[in-house]
Image (cartoon, rainbow, N blue to C red; front, side):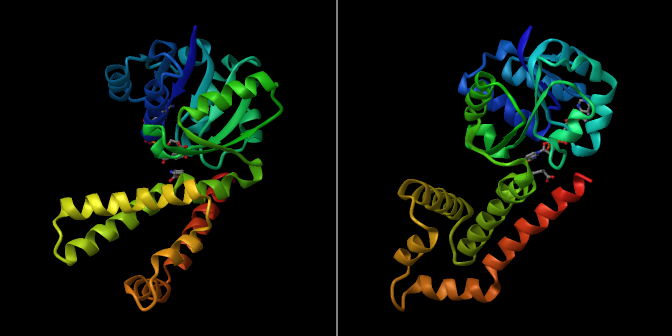
Length: 264
Ligand SMILES: NC(=O)C1=CN([C@@H]2O[C@H](COP(=O)(O)OP(=O)(O)OC[C@H]3O[C@@H](n4cnc5c(N)ncnc54)[C@H](O)[C@@H]3O)[C@@H](O)[C@H]2O)C=CC1
Ligand SMILES: O=C(O)[C@@H]1CCC=N1
């Protein structure tokens, strides 16, 4: 019997497998993974020393906790043929955007937990939201412990999962785009890619850590960078003019809407 099973070894499945094995919360030999694509299974076995199979049924039958990491469109195709193996004592952790606990429970009998992680889980720096159905407190603690090995965990009401998806699920992509912009700005000013990239990445990392560690509102920290008649206030004015914050709020809203649509 394995402790953890992972069905779907794509971007998110790999992030979970790597996060769990790297943090040593679960031994790699306690993990079994499957994918419809045998090359992906082989890659996971090679890279992380986990057990691999082409059979989703084998994963379900032989695991206590099963992560579902297939695309929303593949949810039913994946689960329906093996639904009888999802028994009541098993725990299913679904990372699938837009598919509700209720929808999953319509197909299987297991305890279902809905999680929205993001790809930095790959390095243990994920932002992870979790919604539970009724679950005994010991199991709940166990799941929290497991998820903490992938990053920061925030419990939310399931009705907010679409918003979470729009903020932190898709969020890394927005930040990557911002980093790209900083790098290109630096290159335009004469820095090499290497110089600009190192400065841009550390600026985002440092700024994020400063918000986290001081607990101060971002606007307070922003004011501390802005000298009177200095460079920053000129840049901030330009960002307001170009609608940066407006664009970011709309991006979160659009992704939230899309997540809601996926759940219909
Ligand atoms: N990529 C991301 O940043 C995040 C993704 N998610 C969710 O995670 C899920 C997976 O997303 P990605 O990993 O990005 O997609 P992906 O396309 O990279 O991975 C999905 C994997 O599922 C496999 N698959 C498809 N049908 C299968 C089946 N019947 N049996 C076994 N494996 C099967 C595919 O071969 C593929 O390797 C989605 O539901 C998405 O909403 C959630 C949070 C963040
Ligand atoms: O783009 C998507 O649909 C998935 C869900 C959150 C991040 N990636």
